[in-house]
Length: 407
Ligand code: FAD
Ligand code: NAD
Image (cartoon, rainbow, N blue to C red):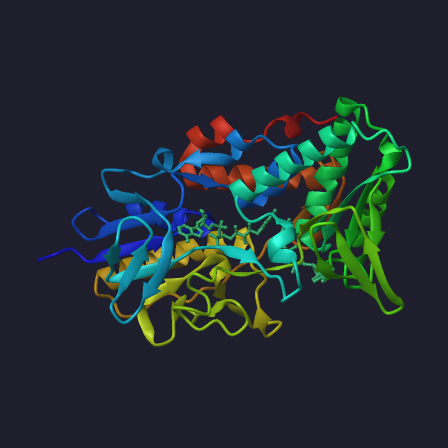
């Protein structure tokens, strides 16, 4: 009797945790488990904006996959998924040919949503992976090095961050701190550097508590961020961008654009192998796709309805982490021939937006928080994740503890 094969695509929050849970829940003779990921490391996507701005240490947020999985139990394949053939029950890989599955977990994360805006794909930088974050950091560093040689004081260095959702705000908060450092390092007058955050909506952090959004905006303005609200990025090109408001258009160039205007599920599976009407694959309460009882989708590729709002929950790591538990338990039930599966009922604990390294704003368990307490809350969330993933060893090796000694 051959063991059933579970194939997990992606080792981000959803995929790696599903793997770690399964290696605890299932005995080795119950199933063969294969994890497939582009890289041999897991990265904390929630901290990529720090790497992109150049304020965060990439070595701290990259965790070798073999450090957290039991390689006696799990077969890890480092490869890029090119597609899924659902009728044949196989995954197509870039180097290793095809892999068949009995059960599939799709956890391939997000890609930037560009809404068809001309030039974003070709000319804007995006925070979507460790490599793309490194690329942004290096580009910004080289822009400053080049600008230091420009003697005409009328010329300025302009960075445009497109979108003031959580990613845009957290990134711009890190970047504005980094800009000060880079100005000092390259002896550039800070007055000659513009950091613009352009947002199509009337305010930043759209669905967030308005008083906290106002706090974040004022803090960032004090630090030197210029906001353009009710202003859309209309197009991007090699020189800069065209911004549009109800009053008209404005060209900003030269400028470098970092696009943080939204995300959608990875198109390797979303809208290709599986229907994804709004960029993510709708799943049933047990996290499987209707009609595909052996396929689970979790994380940013999935759309889970929130019964309260009757809209899908926003794609967050918090959601992916909770989904991984339900997904692993349901897979275990299926492998053991149990018919009834658990329904996914997320208990959202709130959200915190960082505003640079030393400030933040958020709602935790219904309570509003800002400043150092928000920074502490975020550190606790990050540390809790490390503990779930790799126990005390990972927590003490990579956790954030300096915040606990804050004045
Ligand atoms: P990911 O964690 O993105 O992982 C996807 C994995 O799939 C990666 O390992 C990737 O390498 C791999 N992969 C992708 N394509 C392929 C392929 N073709 N072949 C093989 N492997 C592939 N959420 C919060 O709850 N709190 C936060 O504070 C927060 N901060 C954020 C900050 C930033 C800058 C960003 C961008 C997002 C943030 N989010 C936050 C959202 C959160 O990061 C995502 O919702 C979460 O990462 C989704 O998890 P996932 O497992 O679906 O995907
Ligand atoms: P988002 O969709 O939340 O925000 C994108 C923003 O870009 C919106 O405010 C939108 O109005 C704006 N925008 C869209 N098109 C534009 C245009 N043409 N010009 C100007 N502005 C434009 O996307 P995100 O910020 O990348 O977040 C993605 C997901 O990740 C969300 O679910 C978010 O909650 C989550 N996230 C959470 C945290 C956290 O909890 N701290 C941090 C980052 C991301």
